[in-house]
Length: 273
Length: 273
Image (cartoon, rainbow over all chains, first blue to last red; front, side):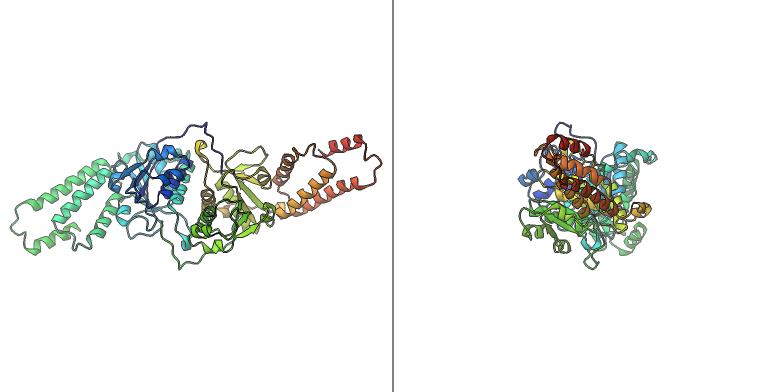
């Protein structure tokens, strides 16, 4: 569909970041950039793009969405890519064994509008072409966004998934005014602050031999992160929690004559879990 | 986004036909087929695909949407492609100088649901990669569907446009029940019946030298078709109109001693226009 009116100004209004995790093909990055531009999004972030950056195929498929391509930011880890955001949704077509709310694109768009309208930073995570997002990436998000696809044919190209969310973002314009933003919760913590809490907690748990085996550690970490990011802690609450973790952690640093005996450690684990 | 559950049955429920007019690239046909499959559409029709049919690239990009690709129908003209349909929307990002209602994808999807739910055939026209739909194609449709794109970046890939409409079709599932279908209008005429009326009328107008110049004929034909297809005539009304045209037309066939004189012809033209 032709119809671009080059005399119209490009919108660079506050909008959700689109974060592509380890995208494999430049073409998909370019098509995603074009889909974003169609509906007024411009903040594109890449975590470890396989073909590196800049990428010629991406620029070509972006079909002149230069204002998106030129602003692309590349990160080494997903934690860095979402550090400044305080509302993050994972897009996935697969059910996860994780206690995360699951919402549709329309609900997601309305919440993003409300959050960004109130001055917060927000983003949407999209996974790899082949297998989507890892559980540890989903665990970092507030909720899962899934599309009402046909169960027998659920596999969406990344750019197509970006398009539906961008379309809903545009459609939610104006509707957000009707959504009262609940300011009583305080300023939500940024993802950076939350990850800081997680890492502090996990290090403390390592020291306390909380994780029964090395194999089980990753899934246990995911479950903890999922659980704690679901709560929507504000900055003050994160500070409080970090204080709690530090306090519990320091307890183990005290000289403890019983340290090598199994019994007291078992007791501690029971209290923690 | 992975997540396809191959144990689930594919839906082949009644749905709108997706009609691609002279698609240039097999890749776009394939991507459109995949987008359709994601949201339960399966009736794909091609008018004069440039690279012919079947097309290897289309099959490859369709990502196993075999149930769509194997059912593709190819037509030589758009009139043939929509002959069995009684509700047809044109998708376009460009304003047309034509009196056609313009609706959004959500409204379109609800009307398609109501129409198909009542047993009617319906379809969505998509134009060429480079310049979209011609005015004579738009003229054949009931209304124009346009997407809420950024004015400064309105150009959507065909498969992306198909995806948004397919997504809205899926989203409208269930909502249609709340829409009362107005059965009082009778069975709407199929596009075949309407085109029959148009052609009969245009031939009659040619015989009567209605079109002042050959250059102006195409745009005048479009305006007439646009006007007459907007009315939503039912089958009986089309039959009645054809009878009217035939009756007026036959008047010229009567031996008329004044035929070569300019004056009576001028008078006839005035009555017709």
